[in-house]
Length: 325
Image 1 (tube, rainbow, N blue to C red):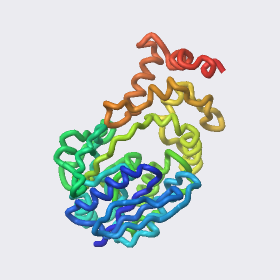
Image 2 (image 1 turned 45 degrees about the horizontal axis):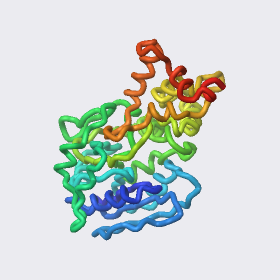
Image 3 (image 1 turned 90 degrees about the vertical axis):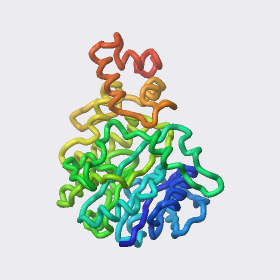
């Protein structure tokens, strides 16, 4: 079984370099790494024992769905392994996915451990090596994701759990799904849509023990208030296609923050996020990941007066000229 590791890249030079270094330490090397480059310039990457192909897409934006499809179309492998650019693969990731794929068809989702800030400083300048034992000690599972199955694989019964950060699918099955829907532009929705397409087609989605990726630290916002425009547009696209909404937890947070509301025509933005909204949702330096659930707890408590304030009041104190408009 031949394998193509596929990733998308825009900026994140150090993260991508570490992904390549991680693959170079694999117990089973991939047959190639395919990078859909969403910028004008090619990356300067370390040497490795497998081909690395950079597919240049220009700098017209960050078309996530299109880039995943381009990577699949260019890949030569029987098995496509998708890793986000900020992931470092465990040495057994490629081999674990090959073993899982031998059990049957479908989408396979491996484990993810989130690394704290500074964890990747363990790379050796001499041999580009990582201390994976250290990664396992400090890496944590996201509280909003389930843990690995007891056996090699376990069926995932909810398509909404699909996550493109670390998954594998045969090239044949990917082609049969039609790939990611390129009508989703910008951040949000395309993952859930693909999960639903897969489930609707009858292909199973599997949790995999192992196939572990380590997510490299970078500051982020959850809920993604900085992407509110594309999130709302992609919710509208999902409703048009499937007759129901998605990203409900983000929509609830946007509503409680006074950023958006549901109207007869669908969700509409009320205002741009201000610094108070960004501060509330911003991942802090001591956090290995940002959590929408944690932010929602704060917002719901404020909404019932448990903290003596409200989301609207918090926004008004931070930026009265925006909250009052």
